[in-house]
Image (cartoon, rainbow, N blue to C red; front, side, top):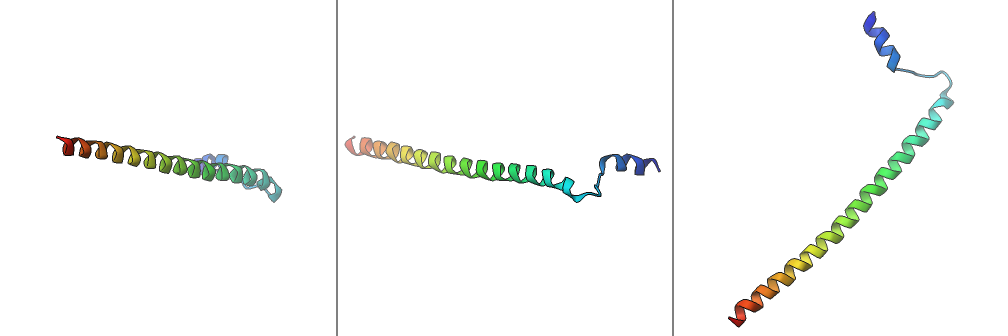
Length: 70
């Protein structure tokens, strides 16, 4: 009996289904924000990976030039 009372405090299913609209809009806004943030992070990550690869190639070329001149 007490379990049912405790669970019923957290569960609320309104009779008027229009009360779901603000929750759906809020969920949609946060979902879109999460997707855009994820895409931005991936884009920045790829850009940084490309910079690191170019930097690594420059260092390797410099090391090879130094070895050839020795």
